[in-house]
Length: 209
Image 1 (tube, one colour):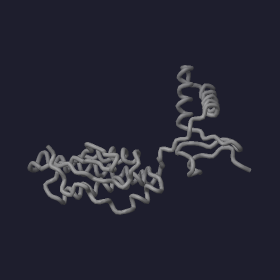
Image 2 (cartoon, helix red, strand yellow):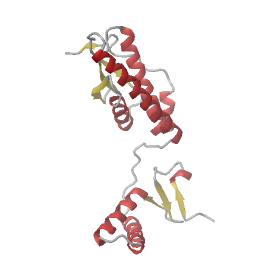
Image 3 (tube, rainbow, N blue to C red):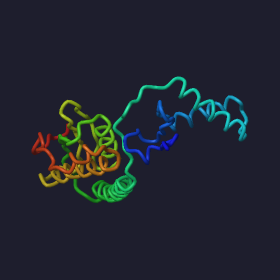
């Protein structure tokens, strides 16, 4: 006997946070969309009651079944262990980098800044954007450009006095890319970040203006 309803966490072929409904002609229901339509229904009635919530759910499911949206796979996968590792790394890195930047401002000598190009291993738009956002959240460096054609991010580094500092900045970007992909990437992307990083396009960096 076939199941009428299947959830995405039990079927890897389904998009995340979705459910497959039906037996013969199966339809994919987007659970966040149903929740959003239900919320709009309750707001239209201006009263939060069980009757309005249940009616909103029924109407939302009926609308999604009657007017199905085309299936679009954004390439997003949710890996709980990978998400935990990414959050832990970012929190630790934000703390240590914040302390380092504070010491440079109040107790250190002026440092030479630079802009370096770091080629990434994943070329999908989602992973490029997610990696750029994660890197920008860490003090001491910020993304100033993302070049989609070559999957390269350009990073402004505050401490670039020595080549070792530039190499450490590149390794940090590659580490964040790996953790981001292992948290949200597809199996193909996870296999890609397991490979060695590509050679940097700018070996010594470019002094910042």
